[in-house]
Picture 1 (cartoon, rainbow, N blue to C red):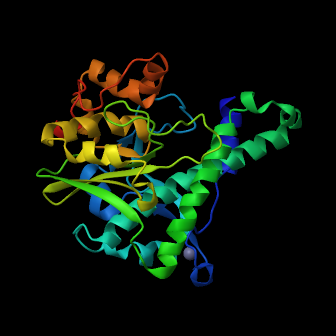
Picture 2: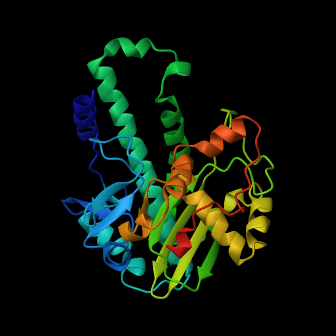
Length: 320
Ligand SMILES: [Zn+2]
């Protein structure tokens, strides 16, 4: 099974450039870092290594996996030219919270998630080719069904991002930027199909298939002596997320940190942690972190248990 899985994973890799202006593309699709290599990964790594809660095919159930800095957070979603030119304002300049920089952080976060979902769709096609009888599987039993719908939702986001890039107009996002006076030893990009706000009011019903799902994008990264957290969504969803927006803005410093501590393992595999810092956690702290990675919050919610994301978990990523 493991050999099969590894082979299919490899075969399902997609090399493409997501940039909307294909005429400008350079020939080579490169391994683009979704978290900046020189600016961020270099600082978070120890001896060129970072840890990620993203298993490799040869150990698919490992809670934390070691990655070399050059391979960590890499995806093949841009050509060399577009990776270099599009992201220059966040690669070569300090983060100054400009509209363009916030857009680019958010867009790169989107690009990675969209690309990963496309690769998963390709994996489905490969499996169906190898075992055609699965075509008759009912939708309710198809493990790829959710991914298919998610791609449809992300394609709506893609249209807006593409238009913004072509017009160089970065006005489509609403964002919250938090600034902390400390450089942390982790970084993350991810997204969430927000179901509940911070007071456990329902925001979106993910089981209502008549509506497309709206996303919240999150990036957390250290820069110089500070750490920034960008939470963003499309302006067209301001009404939908209005209470959430207000709740986020009313959090004090501690609750902001708690929120990030809870949220990151829940929403993202694209999280890098300094290995020495991670090893400072006790086994039970690692286990609690791992339980969020494995979806404990969703399980709790399905039993009607309310989860308060502003309560401190046992670990504190900011103190590592
Ligand atoms: Zn390109």
